[in-house]
Image 1 (cartoon, rainbow, N blue to C red):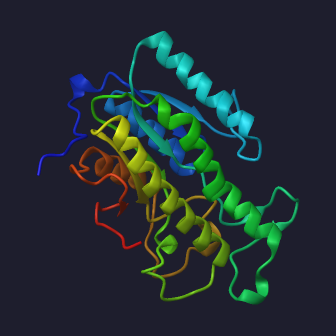
Image 2: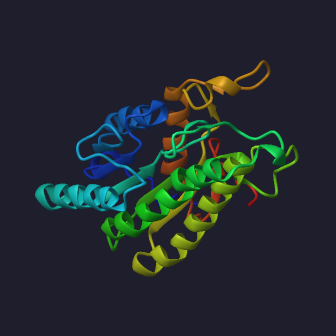
Image 3: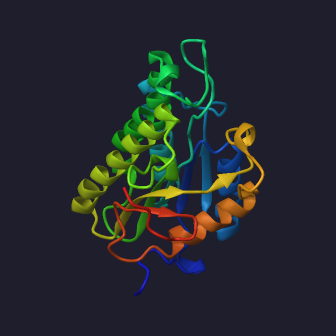
Length: 247
């Protein structure tokens, strides 16, 4: 099967945007895309303009920044990668959130923040960024999710907020892919599982026997998957080896 996104080096004269591009895996994706020959724009909480999912106007401002870059350079937006995510840390409400081991640990603040960063924010990205993708020709929008967001693959339980918010992200992307196909039949919109990566997000949960990989390796694998996505893969969920994950 011929991949629809396998752009040769001469055809890589396009723009790649990485949201969350200042984080561990995001920065590695930026470096990998630059090495592939893309012009790359990284946006995140510490960039200018800054991206803050709790304020939709910042998502819109960042999208306008990308639109201005596209207009100035005349380049198409060929790669949009959303590498933002939340598993543990301080919430917008100022509380500490950790993955729940039991339903007794569920609380509204942690649930709201997980959904804000893992689902609502990416949904706003879909609203403001997907219209910037070209209306013809191959291009990819990829959203980083997690295998634990798979309902069919859940055999261990726990991690309620993270699992549920990633499952919501998966459904949002699957739905967005259907609409995107009406604009451009060659455009792909997918969910990707990067595996367990050596970042601040995963560090407290890395344990003996768990395959933890450097961010550079994870990014290389993800870009290889993006480059080899076959026709008909839009709206689907893949791991870092390119294997389909059940919903």
